[in-house]
Image (cartoon, rainbow, N blue to C red; front, side, top):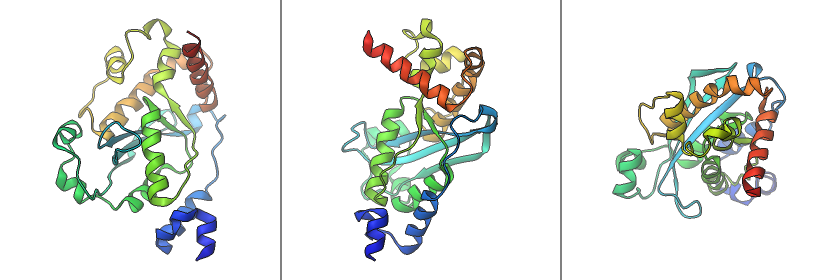
Length: 235
């Protein structure tokens, strides 16, 4: 089995042959064109729930995701998955995300849950609000349970939104603020899938402004994000 270790990384020795085959199939998928117009692209909007806010110590509990394809939210193209926990998060944490101890203990084994996420994602770009946290939690879980170093295309609406509406940046810092500004509802705040849905609605609400500024694809969005980050550092 040495070839599996060399191909997938040392942690891959813990994967079953079927799991290793699923991971290899995901790795072999082609990378989408980041210059393809929005109308011809699929993006995955993602949100996570965790046992806390420490990206180095806390555990990934759930992933919620929904696709935006052809410029529309695809309600039939979504994912809501709870990773099985060996020890459940504390009561205060459960009150935030609503994932009970029973649901945590009876969740999907982490390796299978993460493989399901990768298969759902494909190689399409990921979009989130305050994406750094979601990215860090997902990357650490993928490294821990699949031995995968996850290098993927992400963009962060926490930078895209104020980059498009700089005059609103000071009073609109959180997802809730931007949701209020655009009149976006949320049927279950702090549910991973519900928050992903709200973030997807925000992405669509930003669409007219992006078209005004000739932001036509994921490459353009990432350029706007980099510019906003740079400008914030320069202040």
